[in-house]
Image (cartoon, rainbow, N blue to C red; front, side, top):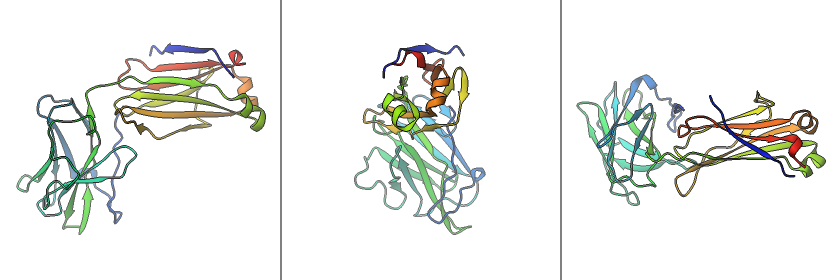
Length: 259
């Protein structure tokens, strides 16, 4: 099945902060932790994220509003999209084997602050960075809310909209459209489906965002309809929002152009 695809830009991101739990299931109190973001040569601040350019040095500083911070169990972790968290520094042992020595940490007990410095930032460094500390008051480890490191090289997404397969319609009496979004950076994007101009939520399934080897990101979204519903509408569109786009990017398929 092939279709004539209409390409248009509509004329008309906020990082989601998640509570982290340690292995014992203890929630981190958002009110107890404040993340201060600093870039040494260029400061650009967003809630929960920090942006810099390759070759620069960045410092992430976490301040604890209550409790004490100085103990041998204070440490930093990073987590890349789709991967498990990795231990990158502790007060007792420093930077472990396998982690670049560009990653260093420090603790100032008097000001209840903990710092992670990344020197000569590289293209592989973007990740979510979390600090962990032992709280004597509750007898548990807790994690900070996390700070996402992004590179200042925004890339606009490439968007393709694929029509349903005629074999699927004939065999399963359903029709699935696929919206492929790739090549974007930073790694957050919103996808919205419309049918004949009306926003559609039912039948939509969107994959997790994946990080590619070139440090861009990709995601896929699917709209599944019954064959009768597919045949009862004409214009199907997928709308993509990303911070590198001045306006949302829309891709559309006209059912009558599919053969």
